[in-house]
Length: 264
Image (cartoon, rainbow, N blue to C red; front, side, top):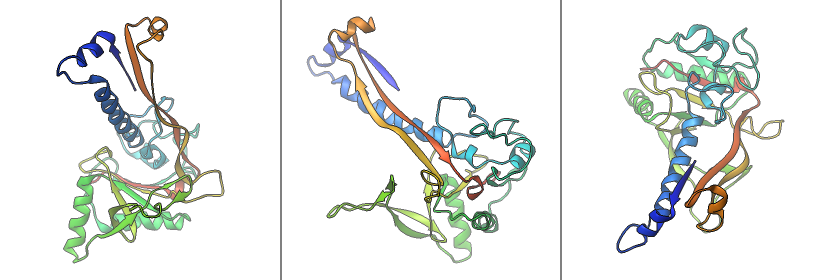
């Protein structure tokens, strides 16, 4: 993500009481860059081109031959990932997908529990559940009807296998849980009538990296040119700034991931 700012605009923004525009552009673009990464990681499998330059999405990771064959919104090739053809036959490259052939149905606790059971039977252990705020609200209502309530737990993020707060510093954040599994809501989750639910196993594996994780080649960095001789090389009377993140969503064991779709 990048922007350019003319030398004249920068001069005017620093004159009188005008707003200093450069810090505003840096901040605004940084937020947009972060949000766009979230949008890519949660993009619908039908909207994500396999050869695209963006990051893979959890919706594609948690796909299967059954979803491609039976859900009318998913075309042949949509579920293919890492040169793996998911159109031909069900195999070990399938995640568990609970669908209703593209017809939305009511969310029930039985549907949720079945997804968790299938992950466990495949040798996985869901350690994070991702869904939308609307589905989380429906989920809480289902539990309240049975006089059960979502518990709250503190989650401390792990980066490169290292986790935990620094001494003297409060760390982590509070989230709702179900059967001890933290639920992380996102505004960008794919919506049928209500948002889909993903059960993700991000534990360590016998391969390099976790079972499912984001492999970072270059962490997010900000770069910019100056109002100097670099303007000659850019053929621009101004400067440019941009944010860059290089990495990819990587999964080693697909059947330890699950998705529930076609919900209302």
